[in-house]
Structure formats: C-alpha cells, structure tokens
Image (cartoon, rainbow over all chains, first blue to last red; front, side):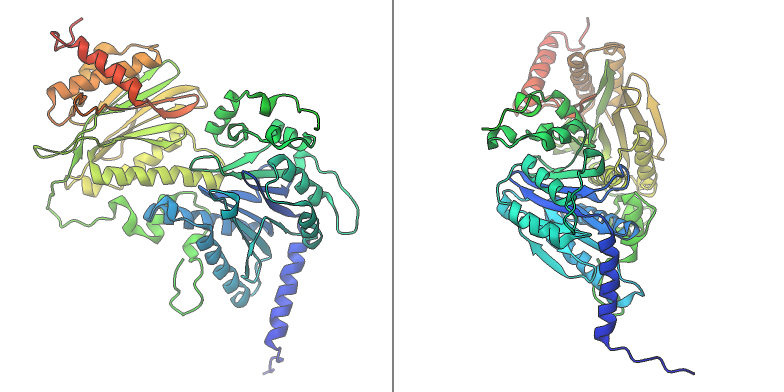
Amino acid sequence: MSMPFYVPPEQVMKDRADFARKGIARGRSVVVVGYDRGIAFVAENPSRALHKVSEIYDRIAFAAVGRYNEFESLRVAGIRYADLRGYSYDRTDVTARALANTYAQTLGAVFTQESKPFEIEIVVAEVGADSDSDQIFRLTYDGSVADEQGFVAMGGASEVAEERLGTGWRPGMTLSEVLRLAVDVLGAGGNGERRDLDEAQLEVAVLDRDRPRRSFRRIGGPLLTRLLGEPREPRETTDVPAAALGSESPVAQADSAEDASPGASGPPTPPA
Amino acid sequence: MTQSSTGRPRRLDDAFLTAGSSSFTEFLTAYRPELLPAGRRLPSGATIEAPHGTTIVSLLFEGGVVMAGDRRATMGNVIANRDMEKVFAADDYSVVGIAGTAGIAIELVRLYQVELEHYEKIEGAIMSLEGKANRLASMIRGNLALAMQGLTVVPTYAGFDLDSATGRIYSYDVTGGCYVEGGHHSTGSGSVFARGALKKLWRPGLEEQQAVSVAVEALYDAADDDSATGGPDLGRQIWPTVAVVDHSGARFVGQDVLQGHVERVVAARRDNPGGAR
C-alpha cells in the first residue's frame, strides 16, 4: 500500500484557487455599475437565450461569469431561496445581504469540500430607495464576499476593467453614460487592443429604482441603440423615463409602447 | 438554507440546487410541505366553521375580460368581513377570483402568484394562459382532502391570451376540474342569481365599460337574493372589486369609476327592484 504524499493545506488551497481563477479568466466579462436611477448590468454575451444576468426578486438581481452550468444552478437556487423567503415572511424581508451570505456559504463549502471548486464569480445587487442605499456584493469562487461601492467588473481581464471603471465612473451618472462607459470597458483588452462591441453582443439589464415592485428590466433593441448612441449632453435630457425601458415583461412593453415622450424617443439634442 | 446534520457550514440545501423544475409548488412540496395551503392536517370526520367568501362573476367583452367580486365574508349567519378582497391579479395578464373558505383561498392565491412569477424568472418567459390555468387546477386538486372536510376553495381564473388576443375564462370544481367558459361565468353562493342576471344582460361584443356595469348589476342581483353576498354599501362606500384584463394587462377599476356604475345601477332599481326592462 502506497502512502499518499503529504501536501500542505496552503498548497491545496492555492492549487484550487489557481484552478478556479484560470477558469474564470477564460470567460468574457460582466460589468455591474450604479447610475443615478438604479444599477445597470452589462455583459458581453452573444446569446439571447443563455443569460448571464437575471432577476432574483423585486429589487435584487444576479450577474455571473464563469461556467454556465455552475452559476445557472446558483441562479435558480437564489430565485427559490428568495421566493421561499418572500412567501413565508413578506416581500420586504428578502434582502441581497441574506442571499449573498447564503451564496458565500455555499461557494465556501464547495471550495473546501468538493473535488472541484466552482469556476464562477457572482454579483448580487439590490437597488435601494436612493443611490446611497444601493448594495452590490461580489462573491468569488472561494466564498469570500466584498461589499462594493458603485461598480464591479468580473471575468477575464477584470483588473484592467476595474481600473478603467475607477477612473471613468463617478456617482450620479445617467444610464446612457454608464452604459457607454461599460461598453468601453468591456471592449478594452488586457494588452491594449480595442474591440468595438455592438448591441448584438451585449446583454444589458437594469434594476430601476423608480419602478414599483419588480424593478428588473432587460434593455435591448432600439432603446439600447439609442442609449448607447446618445452624445454627451445635459443630465435632464439623457434621463430615460422608467416606462421607456424595454423589458421581457409584457406590461412594460405596453408601457413603452404608450410612451411617446420626446425626451426618450425624439432625436438626441446636440451637446451643450 | 439549512444547517447540515454533519455540522458543516450552512449552505444551500440540495433541494435548492436540483435542476429541472421551474415550479415553486413542486419545490415547496419537496422542501417545506408544511407551508403548502393543503399542508394542514385535520382530524378525520371533523368540520370547522371558518369565514367564507362568496360571489364572483366574470364575463368577456370585446378585447378582454372583466372579473368582479362582492366584498362580504360570512361565517354561518354572521358577517365576518365587509370589505374583503376576493379578486386578485395573478400576474401581469390574468386575474383570479375566489369563492369558498377564505383563509385557504387567500393562501392558495398567494402561492399561485409566486408560482407564476417563479416560473417567469427561472424560464425567462411567461407561461401560456392554458398552462397557467392548468397549474391552478393542480393546486385545487391538492386541496381535495380539505375540501371533503368542508374547507372548499373554488376559484375562477380569467386572463388575456396573448396568442389569440382574446380574453378567456376558466372555471373549476372542487376536484380540480378545469373548464373553459364561453361568455360569462359565476361562482359562489350567489352564483345562481348572478348567472340569471348575466344571461339576460350579457351579449357578445360588449364594450369595457358596459361589461363593468353588467358585472356590478349581476352582483347586485346576487346580493338581492343571497344573504351571504354583500351588495354595494352606499353608507360605508364599499363597492365590489372589479378587475379588467386586456391587451395592456390586468388592472383594477378605480373607486370613483365604480361609484358611478354602482350609483347608476342602484338608481335604476328604484321602484323597479327586479330590474325589468
């Protein structure tokens, strides 16, 4: 009978962490960034069906990078967790903090106990009554949680992306501004090269502070084109009415169909 | 989230991570069955008295469907509640009205609302109207044991079918049978009288406001002859709950609009209690 080699626990953890990090770095990035009226999620994702960003509950959304099957099972688990909690307590008792803790425990347990750690990184974000009470939690493969302020970038070349976000982002930016910043960040490679991302390669969603109850909305099609194409202009005119945000939800579509305010659909005003 | 028996860190239970199901009810059945409306255990043969909700009417109009319910809950000969809501939005495009044991019915509606939203979030798509009606049927079926002990719940479900762009009404029986209704339907203790009124007042191609008025009048007739159905309470300003579902979604008719309909119906019945015309 052969004796197994002694491997120090530091080495085991390091190997696992390296393994997970490599897996994550291969994937495309996701940027989560706060704006004046909510939190925006921008992912480079050519698929219309396999989402990296998802609604969890009324004010809570989820974004992930890495292996699809692994974060998909956590996404579904998060929806079950939130719906169970909302059903047995009240809708206001479902919080991103509790969900982030649960995810952290799960990721931590998988990291130490399973034969392979999850190769994923997750953001759980909750939109509050004002931008000071927005919460963005970032969870990594080993179960560590970070409470982020304003913005997060995950996935391949995330350090470079975070750095660019750090210089480009400031509190109170409009949706159009943060989306253009996010696309700029996602298009910048780690080695200085630039790629131009068009709408078809982007998955964009927001948690819209001003919406009652379910605040998660996907943004695509003409609205996204308009938001990305708007030139820099005064704050008031770049504000997009809540009802103009596109959505999978039919009620929101109905809203946006009715919405004909020139601020949202008229030609962009020239820069001031 | 659970505390595992081996003392390992708290992590999501396997039930949360299992793939394959988009149904919240199925998840609850597997993980926390005591939270299901049918999770109650009654001693066999026993019956208990609990508040009952009464009359729901629904009718189609051109481009949608109207559902209305009176506001009274009764327990035997006592009025248990005067301003109870019995018509609820199930999701963006459908409404559900309940007759029967109020406590269980309201719990069932809450679970049903979560069920539809849960599916929508997990699948990223809205369930078909037929699928939603069948989900409700399976939840009523789960309540059969309680129904046999007197805790009956009989809902009506109405929604706007996005594929055919028409309103549809589904009725149920206690065993979970689900039936598509043409034109109009009523359920609850005053349903016999409401149906009589609907038969005379409803016709194809009504407009929305006409349909709301017909619903209010049918409930007036139900309350006229059924003691368990509450009529419009002019003294307390309590009007029926009326929901409209059309292509733009489900919404409830405002109090001031309802007041207008109610006052017209009541005025028309002065010196003409049967509403002869």
